Image (cartoon, rainbow, N blue to C red; front, side, top):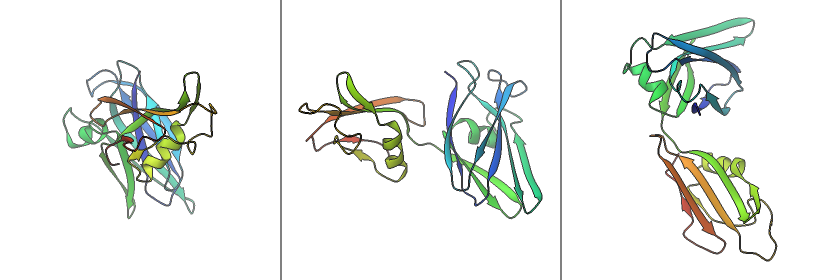
Length: 188
């Protein structure tokens, strides 16, 4: 598996974003590029690279407003540089606009990789719903039919969440119906 990052557009513009994937650890080599769009205020999880090529080498941002193209590109010149840290030490990359320039910042947050609700083989995938709730500020998750209906009538259901912390550590939690402790995630 390659890298995964959440890219967030904190502008009122539609953006075209190209990420440059580094071949291995050396910033002098490139393994390819990937382009994706971000609507205004949209956040999108982007997977890139492979098990060997997990680092980003650069970022290009472009928008078209009133017939005018505004574009900016920035590349990593050396490992450990401030821009290298922005792209590769954090899993949430934020694109903002100041005047005619874009600013790129980042921070670490929890990435929910899977969430399921149910029991045994009667489980529904609720990853999208749990992720949306987390992105809106919810940090404690309880098991209830609100997540995905009642996939197993008459059975006690469980909410199971798997996540990856910003530092790469994987975590998991499970909570049953009527348990008040819940699964607790770090704040966004």
